[in-house]
Length: 126
Ligand code: I3P
Figure (cartoon, protein in one colour):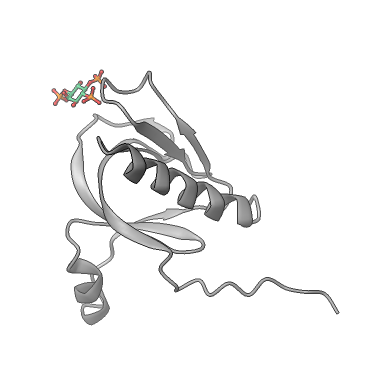
């Protein structure tokens, strides 16, 4: 029988605060606006919240939806051209959304880069 990967899509692989700037929406450039975001990574997606308390609140309030990034087919790459800050990488989704993520703390941003890259590499490309 085929072995089917049954990675639970609800299991949180990593969560924490990073600086985030969304720079394109559906291919349309946005004005860069850095803000601190609580990021929750699961097998297929990332969710961006304002604070660490919000994922629990979102479960109670069905109407509340965080910004969500579909990692299927997404690309991740370090960039030194898109910001004057150090330690910046970009995630580009199939739908043309672009996000920059940054931390001044080297090991922290490296851990995030590898966790997201691993998630993307495990997923089908579309
Ligand atoms: C932007 C803001 C950003 C900066 C961006 C500026 O100005 O200072 O922090 O990005 O640089 O345009 P504003 O607040 O007036 O929109 P970095 O911090 O990532 O360098 P950019 O235009 O070179 O992207």
